[in-house]
Length: 286
Ligand SMILES: NC(=O)c1ccc[n+]([C@@H]2O[C@H](COP(=O)([O-])OP(=O)(O)OC[C@H]3O[C@@H](n4cnc5c(N)ncnc54)[C@H](OP(=O)(O)O)[C@@H]3O)[C@@H](O)[C@H]2O)c1
Image: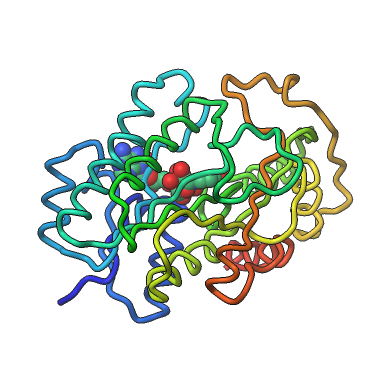
């Protein structure tokens, strides 16, 4: 049986959304978790891809702990950079298409208009640098069925994400203080998964695509929106700065992605993030 999609990071929040989306479309999928396939293990990548020969690899597997990457940059480079190179090399050798998921953290956040796909990259963190290395490994092959999809502020059912953290804290009665000096675009895993599969199914031109829900906000505003959508709008959300939070890795202050290119291929935009939040909460309540 032909496998349409082989997924890395299948147990992550995006990996699970991809499995749901593929099943809805009647696509065959081979989902791998880290117990099956770690991408830094080149022999394992070769074995899995030779055995299953999927039409596409949807490569979302990554070390996503941004502050952890800052403390162990060599490990970040190995997993997110070299690991992605292994995937890209074998896909190229076997003629398999590839969608690599990258991040707004490849930018320095100094822009004042939304980042287009061709904007200069300048990552501020080890995580951002490691993901950029992955992008370069994908681009090096110049394949028309290789896509890098940059996304931002991802949240989805069952995931370790910002909405889940805010709701857990609010429900436990602890005070909430959230940063106001980082602005970005939240992205719902289900909408991202759908866009990734569309790129493959539409046979879009290879290259980089930016993918996030419509709208933009600070983390504090996002927290306010989450509480309001969950019927907890009476809970106060205090303000703080990133420097007050004092995390090891620097984050871009303004990383709004320009999504026009993807919208022109799909002939539609992703829904506004408020709409995405409502669907997320409905799914979480099941
Ligand atoms: N979360 C965000 O806000 C965000 C923003 C921009 C871009 N992204 C990108 O979006 C993708 C999906 O992120 P997510 O939010 O779904 O993260 P996630 O929930 O942390 O999922 C990542 C998955 O990757 C797996 N993984 C970790 N190291 C791996 C390795 N060496 N080889 C293969 N798989 C590995 C993890 O497995 P274990 O569960 O076993 O650890 C996990 O299931 C990532 O590529 C990330 O860089 C995320």
